[in-house]
Image (cartoon, rainbow, N blue to C red; front, top):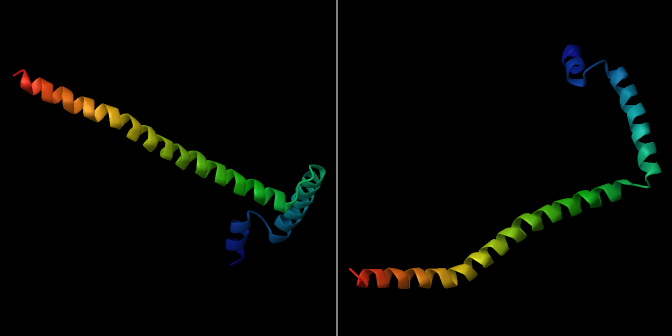
Length: 89
């Protein structure tokens, strides 16, 4: 059991706890210096996901719009050209 815990944590539990505490203090100091708090970070993540969602699916919506707009001209011209080509045979 102890070996599996040691392997999972990547070291002794006390050593890992000390490293996590020191890294947490350092990261907390940096975030405080930048005037960031957990709410700001969560809001940034949410806004980034929303931006990605709108960019991806907003582009799909525009592509469908452009397809339909172009097809309104291209398909009738294609049909007319095929009908005229059949009449020449």
